[in-house]
Amino acid sequence: MNSLPTPTIKSFDLVADFLEHILHGSASSTTLIVCWTREKFIQKLISSIQLQSRQTEGEEHPTSEEAPILSSTLLSNTIDILDKSRRVTLSFCPSLEHLRAYLGTSNKWPGPRLNPENGPAAEQPLLAILSPIALHFHTSQFSAQGISRTLALAVEAASRKSTRLVLCECQDLNAGEEEHAFSNNPWDMAVPLLNSSTTSRQPVEISAAQTVQIRRIAKKWFHFDQTEREAAGP
Image (cartoon, rainbow, N blue to C red; front, side, top):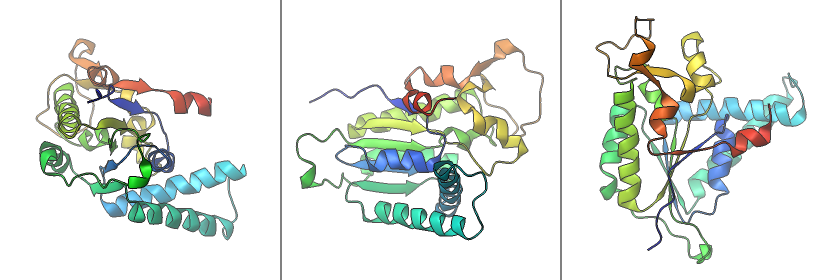
């Protein structure tokens, strides 16, 4: 049996770009866990497709008639591909408790929907998780202790299912002021070492010695793949 590669963190800014990467990958089967409700997922997908369309056209503000038509077409195509894909299983875990419980029962997940057309060249099955760190933000688990627990559960779930593991934290284009800094660069944000007794994100007196970057926490298990961000340029 082939050994599994090191779990990877991808650097896609837009939800649409990450989904395109997943849908056009060569994994024999993919379990995609989205850490939002289905409604919020569609909302974020719409926002990212609209921005993607503007970037493609080189326009800051497309006309009011063109933008909805183009975005609607791209959204319909993406959702249609997800719904009809023989090798992608889509699950929604909109809360931290839901995600942890789901990862903890990976041995009960349905078997991969194998596509005989993939052939022997297909890669190992893939477990992809979209925006798991953001689930911690407004909870007492927004800490090295809380994030480590979730990442460890993800690694254990992938190991039990013998799948590759990929995480991605995409930008929240609809983020409020409080979430903006986290959304722009979540991996470089510093968090307390231990869980808090409050869910408030208001500043508290914590010394630098009592905090750690989320990136450093993740590096215990994951490799950071900057290929996409480097290709996109500054």
